[in-house]
Image 1 (spheres, chains in turn green, blue):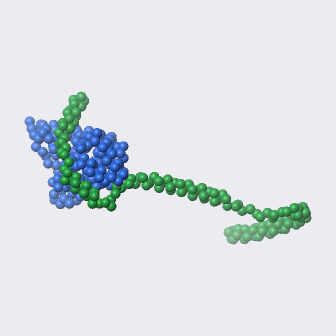
Image 2: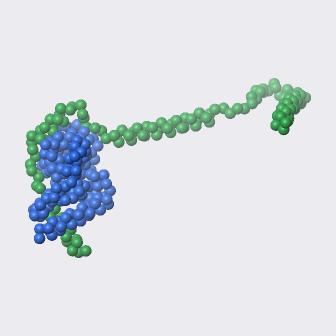
Image 3: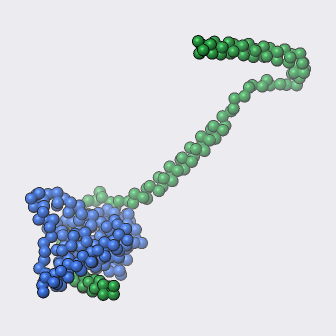
Length: 133
Length: 184
């Protein structure tokens, strides 16, 4: 193992010491490269795409949150279906207090309901018989 | 100007200036890179006729990517990453144009005389090792990059690079031993 490590170190030193040395810069090549850059003035340094992505993501996230909140508020603010209560005034108290009037109204409603239930039973019976036969 | 650690800081500043809009600042970078890339391309098989084109293309890409360069990171590994991609594109384009009956000759390495092995270990390694293994050895011992930097340049993990380097060294050591036996 030790011999292997020494052999590896020897090889590494051999590789490092044999690296061809760097020459001085070829100015003609450098000038050509710089001229090529200058010849393309419409190619400015590209911005890092990530610099646009983050702000865009933030805007999108804010928009999504805002939309969610707006929808939530919209659905909650919709009035629930309620029956319209008559607007009672002080002068209506005698009418309200009139028990007979109340009874008549209730009886009328009850009759309507009974009729509806009868109709419904009739329809159900017809369908049931139709299934059986 | 070479690309030693002391000068790396200067080149980072130059790239920051380029990113800020000072196009003239790129000349400093171009001068520092020219001998380095010339040697890099030569070692990795680029013909002399094409080295100038690849150097210009690398400079163009570095210039355009100035905005994405992170000045807190060393300059050379980043520059070599860009240059390597340019070189790989050149290799791909070259292989596509080689006629089929010549392809085998292009693929098979030429065996250098074993007597020259010690004199020029790099030429020997180039003739005996696969291109990928040679490239890793060059990046490590020629360009003096750390395995983590080589990983960034080649798009691998640091662990993978260490394993491949170990194999490359072992393969080279084996070839040197074989060459030594052949000369006896």
